[in-house]
Image (cartoon, rainbow, N blue to C red):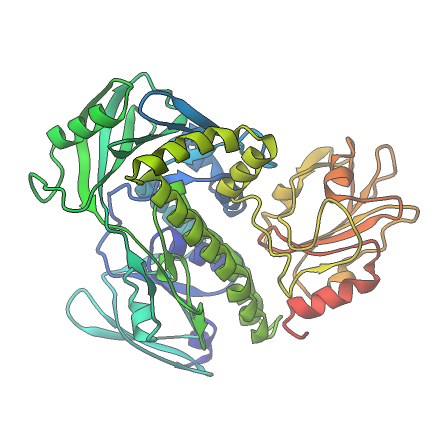
Length: 525
């Protein structure tokens, strides 16, 4: 391979995960190529729930406004039994600018991401099916089958497998995908829905007959999901409208008129995981690394977070700013998250599809009891929204001192004021520029931070002052003191280093121990 190939990163799979990965690489100035075996993007809606943390990622990528314009806001998840509402899980308590989930067909999400990627100078290379691959310390060499039946050799520095549950990349590196399939079969239908159920919430019915879920889309359409007990006979290879209507009538006590199905299917689900996220220069992300029940709508969101975690790290290594050892943190940080999601969605699925009358009665008693406890309800909402996920145990997280914020936590939003420019600048806005963000909160002495404090890491540095203080260039005013509060800045001041993916790498009262964090971020410690 020549030097250009060695610096190029290959991404296999142009779904939401692969597109996010390619966008992040391109944003950070890393050459990449993205391949997909399909001739065009799938029109099927497939994954549909976009949670607040993913909306924050989309804000960073620069696609949030379009996503919000096309999606249906879901302010809560409502859970019912045969006769009544058991619980309403809202997002109003979470610490995010986006206190709602968004219902948007995956086909729309992919189209928006693909347009953003093309604006960044990268086009999807379609009808390219991975047929072979080898890799060593020098890079990756892949063989692709082309649309005309020929073969094309492609070289790159790394390969990222974002190619789904039946990943060819995972197969070629011989990675086991351990887990099992659920016994139940599931119905899926995207239909037009006329119902009194509010369209600003997702609705989950757990009746004696089984599970029935309704997720509204914009424009009066929605996704219906229901389980079928093992051995249930079907009228044909896909659900009929009569079967769908019968299930809805039996399990949903709210009248519902269903018509105009654009996608109907019977499907089975599994929960599986790899035992490691990479071998040499080959990495896996999203469904290629972990699949689980769609309960809770966490699948696509978890995969997008995988890509957002790995993208900036690959960029630092590809640019020579960090040593390859930094990439070890990808598995260390993301595998526990995926394992937690797999276990959580498995418990949710088994509880929702329980057939034992005693188990059903216990479930119907426990759900309103637990969700009636404020801190339990808030914890559940934060977990579903994915804003409470942290990397506190990561080797990249260096924390000194106590406070509401800890290294490894997701950086909270706060609005600061740039007095010379006479504009407000939020933390999330500052993170849209690729690189690190170093914030120095003044204490008894001015925060001693400057560009040199980053020791060669790409990024921006800002000194944060109290209301009314002088604000020379490079200084932002915390006019309502919210930033000081949520970041936990005391009288001595505070230094916070935020990673490109929006997580805190370093928190301390002085810059004296910041070097420890930067050494780790460069893969040198």
